[in-house]
Every structure is written in C-alpha cells, then in structure tokens.
Image 1 (spheres, rainbow, N blue to C red):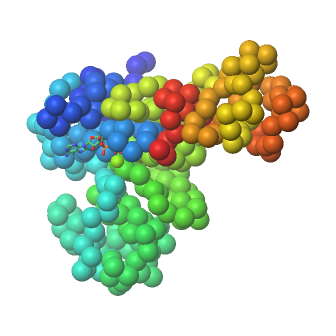
Image 2 (image 1 turned 135 degrees about the vertical axis):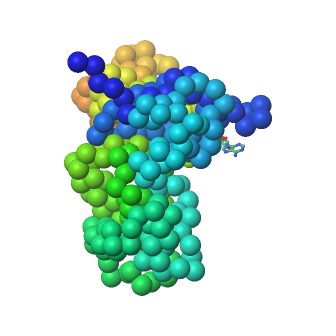
Length: 306
Ligand SMILES: Nc1ncnc2c1ncn2[C@@H]1O[C@H](COP(=O)(O)OP(=O)(O)O)[C@@H](O)[C@H]1O
Ligand SMILES: [Mg+2]
C-alpha cells in the first residue's frame, strides 16, 4: 500500500527578483509525522513555510497540500492549517483572551465553541492565569505559547511551527517540546523549522537539512548522523602550530574539520580519539558522540548558528 503524502513539493522554487531563496526543493510529508526543516538563518525555511500556508506564491515547481493547490484553494487549505509564525504578530494592545477571540471570529468559529476552546487551550499551554493580561505584559515564552494556542483554535490537521523556541530559555523550550510531543500523539501533522539541532533531533521523525535554498540531505535525524558522520568527535581550540591536521588525519585515519578556531577530529571509536589526545598532548576534555551539528558542519564547512 502506498501512502499519500499530506504535503508534497517537487522542484519548489521561490525567487525574489533575481535572488533564489528556495531553489527547486522536493519533499513529501506524511500524516501524523513531525517533519523538520533544519538550517541556519537565510536557508529558506520561512520562505518555504509561507508558500505552504498560502502567504507567498511559489515562483515555480509543484506544491500540493492535502491534494490542493495553495494558489487555487487557499481558503480550504488555510482552514486546515494552524500557523505559529516566526514573529508572533499578536496585537499588543489587546489581552490574551481578546487576541484569541479576534482570531476565532476571523476563522468563523461560533462563540459558544470558541469560548470553551480558548479556555481548554489556555489551560493546555498553562496560560489560563494570564487570560486577562495584555500582550506587552507577557514574557517571550508566554507569547510563544500564546501563538501556539492561537494556531490550535481551528483544530488544524497540519501545524506549522516556524522556529517555535528561538531565543527562549531552556526551561520554556523543554515545556514547549513536551506540548509538541503531546500534540503529535494526538495525530496532528507538524512542520517545524529550527536552527537548533537538539530541537530537530528531539521532535522530528524526519527532516531536511537546508542551506542556501537547497536541501542537502533528508531522513531520520538519528540515521542521518549515523550514516554520514563517524560516531565520535574530539573538539578543541585550534592554534595553527599545535598539530598538523593533515598529518593527524593520515596517521590515525580520522577526519578533521576546522571551523574558526575550533578543531573537530572525527573517528568511529573513542579509544582512537583518546590515543590522539595522549599522543599530541592536546588539551581538551571534549570527546563526545557526533550529532546533527557535526553533520551540518561537514556538509557546509559552517555551523548552524553562524
Ligand atoms: N520578501 C523578501 N524579499 C527579498 N528577499 C527575501 C524576502 N524574504 C526572504 N528573503 C531572503 O530569502 C532568503 C531566505 O530567507 P528565509 O526564508 O527567511 O530564511 P530562514 O527562514 O531559513 O532564515 C534570505 O536570504 C532572505 O534575505
Ligand atoms: Mg526563518
């Protein structure tokens, strides 16, 4: 049995004048999965999301959302999508509850229904005590949670989260991840953009790694790391004369990346890295398992936070 994708893109492209922000990308997203778009600032993540939620028309390529074309059936598509945009765009003069009422009316949700739903969702996101607070009185994390409540008002089948936790402190980030996991269990299909590799590997079933408008790799985050990077990495601050990277690579059959003044030595076994550390007297305590950040560095020669 072949599964029909909920969202399918083929050669999807967005140009701003002569600049290509999204450059012929292909992906398929299936029901109830959490699909990530991981990449640094400027990779084209938001532009891709905006084409999906019918805010920005594509320049070329194919895009289908539940079998519909965003250019021809935007109203039907929007009714099934919830969006947490990169900037919260909440009305700062209104209260939490008022913001949600305005939005519910916009979606044509009957008063009886939205009153109950707003209370339910505020409680779900632990914002019920803030229902009468003005937006400007909320912390960054509360605003983000409120944007998530708003995105859920129309009981969306697809939830788009554009950098849901960027700039938030670790506790709030973990709280939001927990809520996203619960939503995922309830069967919502989620699209999530992020430049946090930890977020991507914690939440996403599959992801694409984007860079300069293109998709470099796609797959399950853990499998991608396993397939494309050696298991272990030793990190240290590099000053050119300590070691000759080519020599190390040759002698120990390891792989080396230098990024700024950080040196990353990759090998499949931890003892090899320990041996290198002892032999070269490199002063570092960091020997760890490799992750998506290492993969990205290896693919592009730069970090996700550059
Ligand atoms: N409306 C626009 N006009 C011109 N260039 C744009 C516009 N929106 C985005 N871009 C450019 O497209 C590229 C991708 O942007 P964006 O999709 O916001 O990246 P990301 O969300 O991955 O950080 C960037 O170089 C950005 O400057
Ligand atoms: Mg963005």
